[in-house]
Length: 134
Image 1 (cartoon, rainbow, N blue to C red):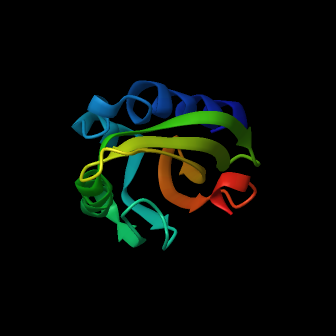
Image 2: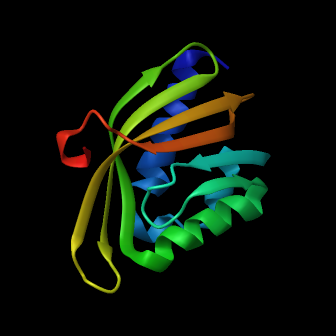
């Protein structure tokens, strides 16, 4: 797939699923991911950390985040193609603490690796260039 096609795929992923709190847990989300997807999350990120594999890993990482936050969603600020296979997104992660009700807004960087139009790797880390996250 071309860089522009991959950018379009990732934009659709945010628009149709990740930016809408009620859609994040939809099984249709899996259509974007390869069955062997690998998810790597920063150790200090929103109630979930580590490396997750496959659809079960994707679901488990989502459950971990949703166990701590309600209304969690991700709003892309900037998408940038990095060659044919990689899209880097600067994203605002938004939600509310389940226990505290406090609103959380954290800038994160999502690095997406795609093959044949499907996501094979998703790296998530806090954007340390953001002064609120330093």
